[in-house]
Image (cartoon, rainbow, N blue to C red):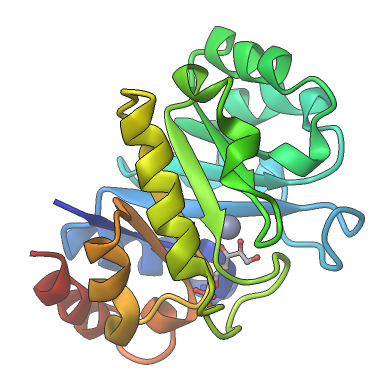
Length: 216
Ligand code: DX5
Ligand code: ZN
């Protein structure tokens, strides 16, 4: 069954602990945490001290999305802060297999993210080293953007590539996910749906329940 991963970027940071508990109590198993550097993406979010500090608030899996240049510099920090899954961008790694090994050696699951214009073919020769593929369904950097419709074809292409390579990596989507487009995303192969504004704007538990009716 597909899962939802609320994205902390859209949380109200002054109520972060309370909002994490609300999410967990609604039955969510993973949260998505964006780390941005203002270079790879035109925005800055939060860093490892914040992740470390919220680690004790919840048992949910921490799905840490590193939107930073040369992420190999920060894999150990991400793991030490409490990441369970560390996702790096294909576009930021000159030696991607080495970075994936670093993530595994740090005791975490490894993900690779692709910007909308980066082809899934770029993963063909390394898919067996990846626990999840994160397809950006908006241009990365900000919450609240509209889903790019052309990404539906990319989800299908990614699913086909993984099947052809006999690989059981999960497909995670990130950006512009709503209760309205979730079913189509799942039908085309998505396993994990990251959702920021559509979870945190309004009543969090109500929003999660709405998603859960689609995920079933
Ligand atoms: C955007 C981030 C997302 C963001 C998604 O670049 O990677 O995780 O929080 O936000 P929504 O769901 O509002 O598009
Ligand atoms: Zn993200």
